[in-house]
Amino acid sequence: MFSSMLFIVPAVVLVGFVLPLWLVLHYVTVWRQHKRGGVTDAAALNEIETVARRLEDRIATLERVLDAEDPAWREKA
Image (cartoon, rainbow, N blue to C red; front, side, top):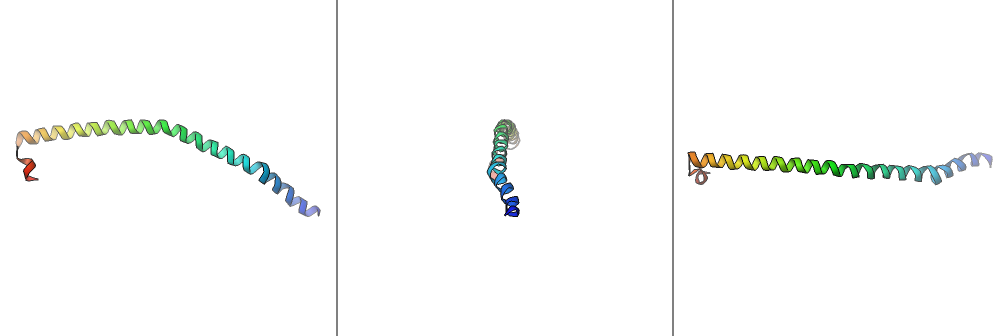
């Protein structure tokens, strides 16, 4: 009887207190990381938008140069 209590009491403490506390703290940490990730995601999207606009400007400049040098370049492609 005493030997079975040596196993049951720590198991009850583990399952009843430690495991739920660990799960709650784990998911609170995950939630906080996702919350902070939103700021970095917004910064990344702003950077991507800036790069896309610069690329659009480069393409427009390249098309103007090609139109000036060879107006029929679009039909050749």
